[in-house]
Image (tube, rainbow, N blue to C red; front, side):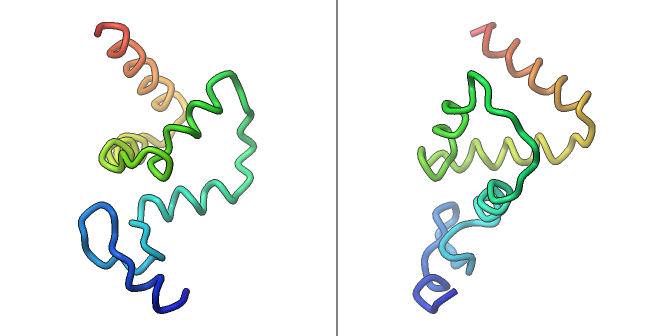
Amino acid sequence: MNTSEQNQTCHTDGGKCGVGGYCRFCKFSIESQALDWGDRDDEWTDEIKAAHPLNTGFYDTYHLACEMVHNRHGKFALVALVNWLIRKAQEK
């Protein structure tokens, strides 16, 4: 990482995050996307990718999503989370 990258302002809190201008959540996301987790594309893949904060600027919701997923370690718990989110969206 060069000096100009280290001195970029973090987009979430205005501080110097030292990760090429990205906060730790975006760094994690970028690194994760580079790995092959065996995920399969489906009918929602393009919309999910388009909703990434590097595309939208919505880092606060991404931070919340990271926290919600971090607190759940099993697929059952993640499925329950997604089910709950879908139900909440349908209620609106």
